[in-house]
Amino acid sequence: MNGVEPTSQMDKQHGERAGNLTEIAAIAHALDSLYLKLGRQFGPLSRPQRRMLRLLSAERTVRVGDLGEQLGLTTAGATRMLDKLESLGYATRLRLEQHDQRQVHVMLAPAGVSALREADGVFLERMRAILDKLGPEEQSTLARLLQALGDC
Image (cartoon, rainbow, N blue to C red):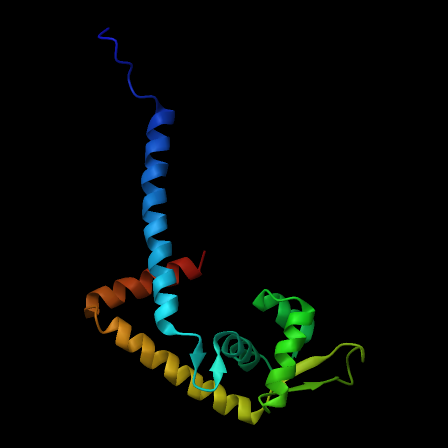
């Protein structure tokens, strides 16, 4: 032997992981940068308010606890956000007769539909400005990759 040991499978895997970590870090940094470019306010709604109204727009009514869980908020955090959205006339809390009266449900109010439409328009315009820097093929590839990640 010449004194040099062959690279072990473990060393190869470690090297591959290190390379992947570099790429993962680059992707994470790019996503953080994009997140900042999009901003925190979309027309009348903050980013978290927009997320909450989007969830409400997908369902007729949602229990407060379920809404908080879907958004990664505590029930108290979801309640505080709902207080604000309700004071703006964007959401309505109610108790459904056919359900346990202790459970509070939430539904999107007509003003919330309008606010969400406006916020989505602002969001899409900002995305368009960013994505205009990519060609059609790059946009298509990005759409497929993001869809694949969403399906994981």
